[in-house]
Image (cartoon, rainbow, N blue to C red; front, side, top):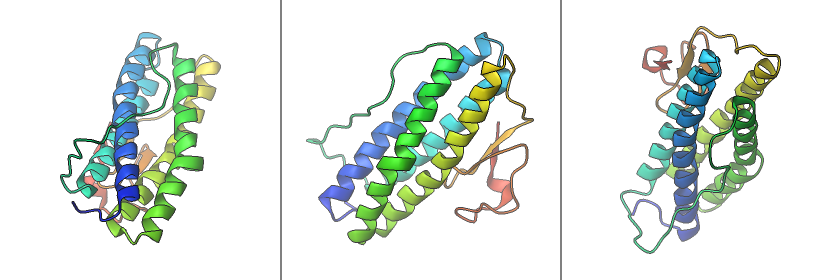
Length: 185
């Protein structure tokens, strides 16, 4: 096991569960957005779904292959598919929970326990989730006005999940990955 401390391992498993569920939920919510005539909101959901997959993968790797047969992974979040505006509210609330409550606690525990890999993984996710909450709010504002969000593309850093509209930066401001690594949606 790469993680030495049980609390940090539990937090990594919890974060893995939450990010995995968000990954799938956002794919379904993107389908609803498309059905309702919001193709760019679908694109945003698909891109952020990929970022959540990046976070889940980072958390899983930090566990070092420990399957912890006796550990369960639950993820607390809204379940199901509603109208696009409702789904965006659910997405915003989930992202804000991660930004305001979950990741700050997980990050501080990893720092306290000198779990550098977990600290990095939690930091990457926290920084991306801040952006996700803002982008989902912009999308909700657009949908409430009967419009699609304005964007040409959504770019995701495959290392940390950093998310940006329209053009990737020359270098990821979170992890330093080069522009060429960003995945476009």
